[in-house]
Length: 569
Image (cartoon, rainbow, N blue to C red):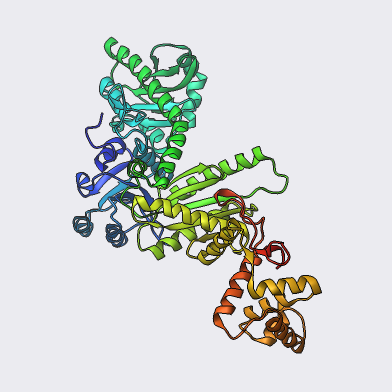
């Protein structure tokens, strides 16, 4: 096992170097715990996790590397990885010393995508779950890299742990002591096809999967290249083959080491089963932690800590999906789950510490937002809009964004505001598909005001009630006339054009509004009261259902007609 911290840069270099990574400059011990993996993109605004390992894809030259190192220092990054080789440069050594950002080099031929995947796998161990880590056989549960190193120590040989398709799940250190085929396998995270084919032709896999003990494989020769001998053993869970463990040998195994190898395979099986079972359990646990955090109670701080979101501003993203007419409930539930999973992938790609859970009909995301509130809100809107663009034109899919929570107790308010924004979007009162509560605050207030009027069984009264009653009795258009006049700020030409009548006719109607409604059109308070009532009247009863927002009732009731005001607008 590694003696270094589970998420430290020293651990990364011990597990991946020198096969994949070389330390060019810097002190890995000074980096502290790594917070995640970021990819540098010069054409986009950068948002890295704190203490991130940043992959500088396409970054070359001492000048460009030095500029990026200084930029990453401002973001609190731990290390920068660039494509090797990196020439000996006093300038870079000086910049690394100045910034404290370590500089690493990725071996030529290695894949950036594979490096990112392996780093995230290594760093994600223990991300959530029990506050204190569990161990199996003295190795952190599910940590296949630590287990590979432990087996390598027992066997005195470099180790790989592979799945049924010969994909490299984890590997030990000391791979430089192996051979070219092993190095190629590590770089591609997959055993090369030509070697897999040779093993298949010689019945290696057939013997491996039916044998209980280690299988010794003579060194194959490909294109005149002789590899080291191998010893492999299948990893089993009952009758199921989970994968295999391979050691590259420079000397034969002793009987004691053969027995140790056989026992190690049983331990690998426990870790692989734990990892597989943990995937579903992690989703359930994550949903529980997100729920606890959103409630904002005494357990919120611990939940945020286990999600890795403590001590950083966070806002709540709420995604809702309305059903199409006649849509099957089971299909809708499956679609919501699929979209929630897609949202989780999207948010974690932008901010690795994001967390998403489907609670009822709404998918809630906890999205870390460094910076000031206005910038955070714009960033969240951009990320949510990009997600909706990627999902296509799925009707009824909308996203509401809450307020920034600077402390755990404020998350409940952020969720409530995200729900309020979501409800406005469901009501159709906003033309867009994504909105923050700051964008639709007034509409949210109007919806809640209508709910209050319905709950109190309030009746429409005053000038507007008289106008509604007159229109109903005489088939007139006084309410429509008043609304057009108010919307046009009293401009008769504009107002008359909006309702397609002659200006003189409109002037006559607006005088009748004042007479019938006993309405002083010069009074600002009277105009404001009429505008609020007209807004409530114009709300669609059935348009704001769905999600956590639910469906509200109608507007205030008319004193004269007994009908809801919403139905008379």
